[in-house]
Length: 426
Image 1 (cartoon, helix red, strand yellow):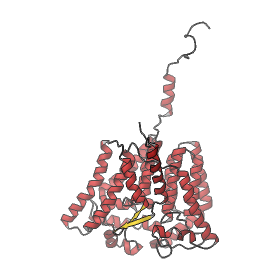
Image 2: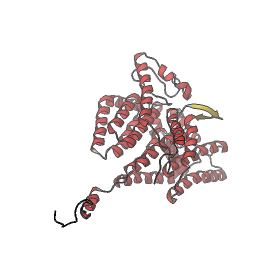
Image 3: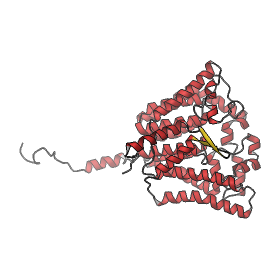
Image 4: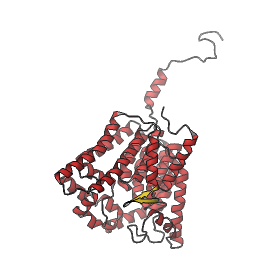
């Protein structure tokens, strides 16, 4: 039987506190190792990884996938070194990037393989706390024309509100960041918490309320995609869930429809400065050109070299491609493209088989990486871990209704244990 929490309460409480702190302080900087910023989320990810090793099942197929994901970058770097490839990162850059990659692969793998994964407690309470901070930022910016709500958290995250890529300006049109480094990540955290809360408590309207508030405050197109895709899979299975999803769609269209359309127009007008363009459209040409020259992929850590050689850095002002799906294609080439296609087919197959939670876990892994994450971001992988663990806990394969009804008709009638034998006079 799958156990989702430690049996010892003395062990359970510290782990729950760790999970809670890791979400609220996901990108809170606690130190530096060289040029790498150590965050509370990164430290918590290491602790969660160790806790998940307490009981692990070891089926062959997932182990083979994890082994391939870990070994292929090593072989590719060795081959590129021997061939003296142009897009070859320095050994220290490769080792740092590979260490982050390996940590993320193992962490997400344990979310699927551990029989005692760490569950995120109080997801609705956590979402309420983040919404409170995000709402305060939006209100202060609109009413007082001040970025004070943002300036309180910026030093803790190491971000520049005015001169960095966020370029915040006070007013009602500001996009809240909550406790995170950008509006898109704040939206992703809130969307993740909303769906985890639904998986744990099945309160569709409450989850829809959190999603609506998150969309209003962050104005994140990535969250809109995440809510539509994951919501269709999880909430579309029941009338109540479908009603909540439909209500959310109507409210978003009515309240945010014009703002979303305006943002799309602005992004189209100032493509190089728009985050949506930098993450979705701009990487297409660099990735295609790189894979044409290196069909097996480039070594992990070469993202900055690709951005510089392809002109991506000059066009967008970013040092590297920040979309995790494009990064995966760069590092795994045609094998990566085949893996992504297989994952999408897996989502469809699981959905048709009624394994909606499993389908949602796999689809979230893809979407979260494309929207605001990277497999080289351990903090992003930790958030994925929590969602996958919640999906596994809620996964209840159900038999088709026709099969259930047939079994009920075929079941022999039984007399009550307290009554007289069948056929006996009353």
